[in-house]
Image (cartoon, rainbow, N blue to C red; front, side):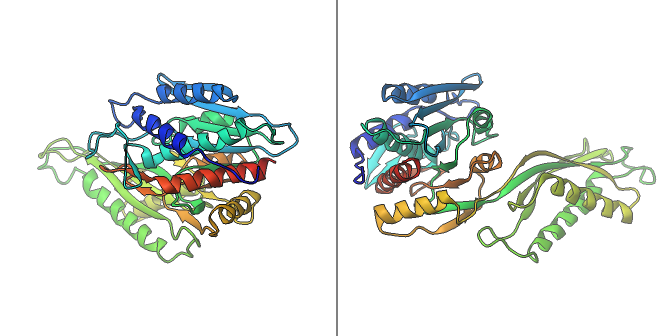
Length: 387
């Protein structure tokens, strides 16, 4: 099966059907219908092609679907992973759920992020489902929910499934992403003493005290610029995202809350971030005894840093050369993906997918020729890795 042939008409048709199914993440937009409908659609299709299908309920109308093409049992297992949820459509300048092919681009919500990648997974998998020759290794196609919000889909997936390697088919412009940043969301709560606005000798202004935290965050951000940078990801960062405090004009505010985001490098762990914020508050308090505050990291995701000489990286480079005659760049991504969760579960993971523009934007499209190339490269990688 050295000459892999992709059914381009099927690839386009299947992509359009995926885009036409509304799968907005309801945790992001109240009108979102969730991923159950699209999961059922994909699952029904793969079952007809001979895949073993498993549905994982995450929540009401929230569902993963996993299709497994079993090999003989004597080879390596490869997982292709992609998320079925999208962001909302209210700000779109095109008809979000009526996919259109124009000038080689398929337009519609999710076409780029990342239903193009999902269609490529299905089309690549079908090459082997229809083959008379059985692979030695297993192929797992994992279509997961909730990546755009809390990644509960991949969290549920890795409770049951593992693999020797994984490719997340997020759009990467036909380059290979081996690393991306992680992030932590945190809140700092500053305490004040609420009194009438005229009683300055008794009041402690929580909002004014919060200014010292903001200056500390600014200094921390400046300090990151002095650190040794990651070869693919640069430096970490921190910014204040939200601030809230006070009750009325004539009262000293009793509380002020700052919510912040800390973008991390792959080696930075949760406990380090907690200690970093604790130290910031300790330093302020040591200079101002009236300063009282607490910090809490309420959400954390690790970064990704897959070894560039790992077998899956070598395999996809070889496949790109075989299909396109071009060696892909090994790059880093500044955004976060489910690949980090797969990697943390012991599955060496990379990202590889098509070109396009407009993820989360008013106009979104995937370049269809790049999607064909993505599908051929994925199929070639499956053939060589699971043989």
